[in-house]
Image (tube, rainbow, N blue to C red):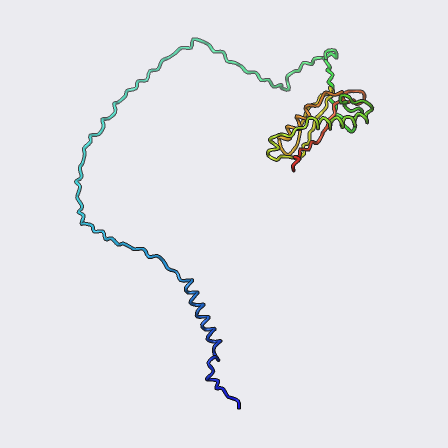
Amino acid sequence: MELKKNPNANVGRNSSLYFAVGLNVMLLLTYLGLEHKTYEKEEIKIDLLMLDDQYDEDIPITTINIPPPPPPPKQVVSEVITLVEDTEEIEETVIESTEIGQDDIIEEAEVAVEDVVVEEVEEDIEVPFALIEKVPQFPGCTGNNAELKACFERKMQAHLQKNFRYPDAAADLDIQGKVYVFFIIDKTGRVTKIKSRGPDQLLEAEAERIISLLPKMIPGQQRDMAVSMPYSVPINFKLMNQ
């Protein structure tokens, strides 16, 4: 025989509902407890300032009689006209015009050919390195033009390596890069008109110093005549630890 249970007598039938309601109430109390703020109350002291009755005193008005200043004295100006006789005669300066008019006659002067002095001016011809018939000769270089070109480039690289010195200031500031140096080997064999272009003035100054130490050479020739030759060389400044 089965026992029949009365659903109204089941105690745990609404336990989940009670649990949810209790949980919400606890969460609400926790939220209110965390959000509750208290402020420190400062004591406010109220002082009452009692002022006695003040009486306005009437200050008497005094008048000071100051006499007016005396009138300025009258000045009598007497005009005296003195007649001065002209004792010296002044000559007026006449300024003549330097412009030539239509009525002016221009004197024709004949110039003889013997009176003309002709001065011969030597031209400073510049021939590029690739087109010059005979390149400037470094001390110790010999041979034809092709051999002189190869020797010129070898001597130039050896000169750069021998005299290269990294500027201390540029090394401390980590300045590096490539500097292009332009110069001319004139018809006397000397290096002139040195110019440079690079990332910093310290490197440019060092590159120009190296090129200025080039020795005097035998000048280049074009049609058996000494000529100037422009040349450019790149100098790469790079720190080894980079």
